[in-house]
Amino acid sequence: MVGGVLSVRRCSRSGCTEPAVATLTYVYADSTAVVGPLATQAEPHSYDLCNAHAHRLTAPRGWEVVRFEGEFAPPQPMNDDLTALAEAVREAGRADRPAPPLPTSGTGRRGHLRVLPGPSDD
Image (cartoon, rainbow, N blue to C red; front, side, top):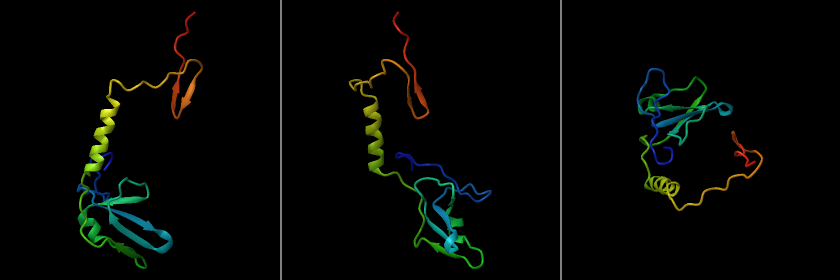
């Protein structure tokens, strides 16, 4: 879920189009595969799994599988997240909200954006 909106994450298993309900993470130092509830964000070193693949996962010989006890369920939007999103949109659209000051001279840099000076009055 991102900002109160449900994500459309799918199972990472090849050919599977089912929605993801669990996250698989490997702990190489402990030779352990951990299957838990769906992480809030997709991570590069973890895998999203559907319900069937989360329950049928096996690990290589010598590895242990630690699995969440209970049923995996698809993520549901939370009222607090939806309320926060609605308030942020409402605040951004307010007409009486003061505009941020513009730089009067020179250039500024903020992350990957650059602020250029406006045309000068000659």
